[in-house]
Amino acid sequence: MQPKNTLRLLRALARQGLDVRYNDRSYSVRRTDSPDAPTAEVLLPESFPVEAKAFKQLASLATAKHPAGGRVCRVCATPDFHPGDAGVPIGSVVETSQQVIPAAVGSDINCGMRLHVADLSVGDFLSQRDRFVELMKGDYFFGTRDVTMTARSMQAMFRDGVAGWLDTMLDGPTGSIVRSNLHQLAKEIDRIFLSGSMSGHQKWAPEELVPETGVVRDGGLATIGGGNHFVEVQWIDRIEDRTLAYQWGVREGQLAFTIHSGSRHVGKYIGGMWRDRARSLWVKGLKYPDSHLFPLSAVTHPEAVQNYLQAEATAANYGFVNRLLLAELLRLRLRQVYSEIEAPLVYDLPHNITLPEGQGWVTRKGACPAHEGQPVIIPGSMGTPSYLLVGLGNQDWCCSASHGAGRWRSRFDLSRQGNRESEEELGLTGVDCITLREERRIEEAPAAYKPITPVIDAQVQAGLVRVVARMQPILTFKA
Image 1 (tube, rainbow, N blue to C red):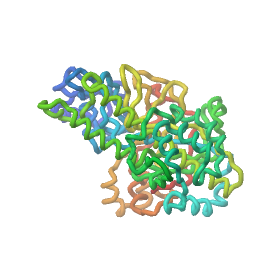
Image 2: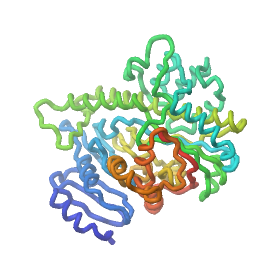
Image 3: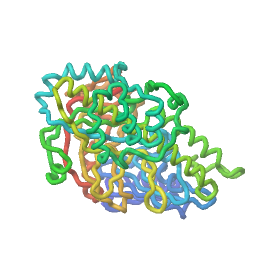
Image 4: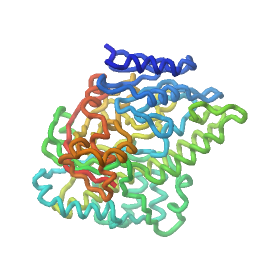
């Protein structure tokens, strides 16, 4: 049955040139002026509104094709689906043949999630909470972290990601890493998607980060970033798949540490560079596409496609190491405050990334891979649960899952209206948010986000994922 109160909106969208239909918990959308484009599918809980702008963006994404023959094969969207600032909706997944679309990833390349667990009770953690928080504020906010690296380490990181960076650290660690258990880090590589290592090249990195010799003090490494990025301390309150939880080293009552960050200024640099290059390579004399999404054709410019994928991989490698270092700073402080705690890695996976899958490539923006048997981490807001799940490899949804709950209200709306709302209305009652900016706390309040439970339930019912464990927030660091 079609959700209530949507018929009028669907009629309005039809007048704007969109054919939108509802069928069994999902919507299909297509631009009526592009009958050859694939129909985009949106998995959306019945209680969630149809966001017209996001539907228009998704339908336009499905029409993105290069005149030389590149095309979109499939488009779908996960339940955290909402409009994106750059014309591509958050929560979108696009499979392409003979083309890649740099704008479909954007500049937050390899934004992703990382999850660690620790054998530490909530009571023991809270007994030293203030000391731990002050140390972490120094590392995350005040620059007391030391992630100094040699030129060789930076080059290896951009080329080969975690594996390249770790090889140089094993030869001679620098900065805070001298206190790390490097053998533990080496064992944990298998718990990172693609081992945290893609085929990049330092030539795509900002020049100041890849000198030929000397040391590099990069102000962006081991930083959380703005927006919805965070580091959160949680506790595991429920196990639903005991077999997998045991295999992954996850137990009820443990503390959990989730990290949501990406490639920071490197991703912005590379993403912006290739947005401009894709536009400059558009066929001369041909009208720009209405969507202003410019595919790179593997037919006419195969070298540009390969260069873009290498550049994207370069930023992705930086993102993997950035999350690792954020986690390692936290793990070192845990050991300083609470004695020798192992805090092993459960998994690290990307969101915004292009990968060779399907008939060519699959690009996920605000969505994560959910291949069969692969761990999936979906956070809620800082006032609601987060989930550890297992992917089921659902081909109907391009083996993908959501990357969170999805925004309900814009940051502009929260900054404009939030100060006039109560803590209870914002969902901030009882929320322990560590930030230097009060406006960040309001912009990222739980009321800004859709409820996480329907998002998870919709994906479980559709066979995208299965829940392994649920985690409740204790405190959240927001830059």
